[in-house]
Amino acid sequence: MILVTGVSGALGGAILDGLRAVDGLDVAGASSSGDGGAVRHADFDRPGTLEPAFAGVDVLVFVSAGYAEDDVVLARHGAVVRAAAAAGVKHVIYTSLAGSGERLTIALAHRWTEARLAEAAFDVTVLRNGLYAEIPADLALAGAAAAAESGVFAAPFGDGRLSVVARDDLAAVAVRVAAEVWADLAAGAPRRHAGKTYELEGVGAVGGTDLAEVLAGVVGRPVEYRTVSLGDVRPLLAGLEPYRAGHTVSTFSNIKAGLLEAGRSDLPAFLDAPRPVRDLIAAHVTSRLRG
Ligand SMILES: NC(=O)c1ccc[n+]([C@@H]2O[C@H](COP(=O)([O-])OP(=O)(O)OC[C@H]3O[C@@H](n4cnc5c(N)ncnc54)[C@H](OP(=O)(O)O)[C@@H]3O)[C@@H](O)[C@H]2O)c1
Image (cartoon, rainbow, N blue to C red):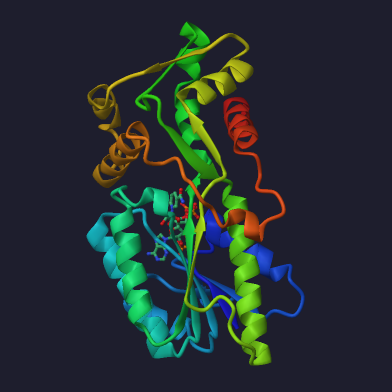
């Protein structure tokens, strides 16, 4: 059986839907809110739920649960690795963070988890996911009202750009890898994805000027990009949970330093055509403004 964790989330849900559409697979989903029926109950914050949830599982698609302070995420992910080993899972596919994000604060928990997985007895495939296109799309959305009023989009990017990817593309890669791992296990064939780490970096990058152009199309007037300082932005994050504010400033710092524009990506090896991210960003901003 293939089990996908985190299926109440957007990524886990899309992976589960994709695997259910593949003929001949035995697939189930797990969630912290699962009722133990159609969706297994696997709450990473309650380690005792995990080994029973992983019973009978051959391939575990382990979707990270990163929305928390580092110590909470490490405890969650450590519990998943221990329970997968105890339950006799044969292969774990982990959704991690792409190499361009190495200096982001969120990288710590992902690299720690990769190290724990590498020590385990089961086979591992690491899907190092690029940043979601929703990240710059939400930043553009936050600046939409000001852009409509003043014709200026202000953001702390400097000249930096970030490579981003459609979450659905990342889900499609996870589906393909999980189905191929399953097929190899079932056939007793060499496991082509065992021990592999794939860099699923976005193949399209956007910066402040790109987002201003997207906003101009949405609000129907010319919009100019203006960079602002990290110090200007930090007070605006005061309403966020503290860990989110820290990660957000880290993201801005990395963009400004030019570190989030990726080089090589394994994405094209798995997909015929990655979705064009600028179109996705425009669609996201437009739908949210209208919705
Ligand atoms: N690449 C990127 O740009 C990027 C951006 C943001 C986040 N991420 C990471 O990717 C993951 C999936 O993203 P998403 O867009 O699907 O997030 P999402 O829609 O916000 O879903 C949140 C995810 O966290 C999981 N979670 C929360 N508490 C949990 C718990 N106690 N036990 C088990 N799982 C728990 C949820 O699973 P349940 O169904 O079990 O509740 C769900 O999979 C995130 O959790 C985060 O680690 C990546």
